[in-house]
Length: 428
Image 1 (cartoon, rainbow, N blue to C red):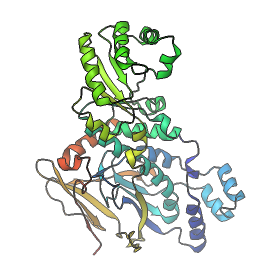
Image 2: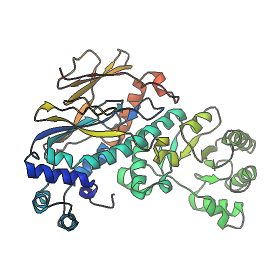
Image 3: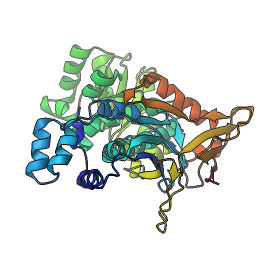
Image 4: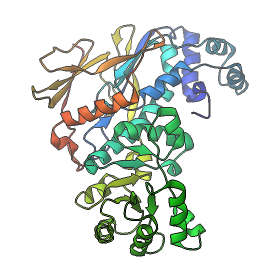
C-alpha cells in the first residue's frame, strides 16, 4: 500500500543513533521499548488500539535494499560499517501489545518491543507513524458509532487525506464499527464492504434531475440511493419517487439544516407512499453532528473529513520510549515527560457483571490476579516471526465488547476523566 519501502519510512536520527551505537559497542545491548500515551486528547475518555495488523506486515518486510543503502551512503547519512550492518538487517526480537480493538488509557503499554538496541531503535518511526494515525482514526470513529446508536455509518473520507492514509483510515473506521467504505482499495485489501452511487456532478451532467435519476435507476436498479439536494430537496424527492417508484431504497441529503430536512423529507416520502425509503445524510458529520440527529428520522450517515482526521485529534499522542537496558529499568526524568522504568505487564479488572473498573500496570513484575481480571497483552512477533493475529472482523467484535464493558459515563462525548482509572505500580 505504501509508496515507499518500509525501511525508509524512518527518521534520520534513528540511523545516526545506530551508527554511533555500532561504533561504541552499545548497539547489541538487550533493550525494551514501550509505546504509550501520556494523556488522552482533550475531551477523550478512552483510546482505541488500531494498526497492529498493518504494522506487522510492514515490519515483516522491513529490509534495506541495495538501492536504499546506496542512497544513504551517497547522502552521507551512514558510514560503510553501518551500511554493511543495514544490508543484513532483520528484526529478530519480540513484540507484544494490546490487541486491535482493545481500549487504552494514559500509561497503557499498548506495545512492547524487545531486542537489541540497534534492531529496536530502527522501528520507532514506523511504529509511531502507523499507531498514531490508526488509533486516532479508530477512536474518533468509535465515538461516532456510539453517537449513531446502531444506525450504520459509511466511511467516505478518501478525498480528504493522503491516498495511502485513506486506505488505512477506512480500515480503522471499519474496525471501530462503521458499516462500509467508499474506498475500493480498502475493500479489496481488507474485505471491507464498499458502497457508492453518484455525486452532484452526475445530476448536473444531465439536462434535468429526472433524467439523471432515470439513468442511475436504469443502471443500478431501485436498490440505489438518489442524491436529492442538487437543486430543491422537496422537488428532488418528488422526482426520485416519480422515477423509481415508492420502493426506492434510499435518498441522500448532503447539505442544509439536516435536522429539519430529515423531518420534512420523511413526511414527504411517507405522503408519496415511499414509507420504506431510507434517508441518508452526509456533509461534515462528526460525533457531535450525529448525536444532534439522534431523535430525527435518519437511517444512515456518511462521514468523511472528521473520520480521516481523527475528528479533531489527528494523532493519538503515542510515544516510543526506552524503559529497560540489559534487564535494568531506565527512567527519563524530564519535566512533564518523565517515564516509569522497566517492562510493564497490564491487566484490566472487572466486576462480576463484566463492567471494567480499573487498569493495573506493574513494572518488572506480574499483577496479582483477582477474579474477572483480563490480561491485556498478547504476542505479535516472537523471535522475529510474526504471530497469527485475530482477523479484522474478530478485532471489530472485540472493540464492541470492550465498549460495552466500560461504565456508561465513559461513552459520553463531553470532556471528563478517563473511563476507568489506571494504576501504575513502579519498580520497587
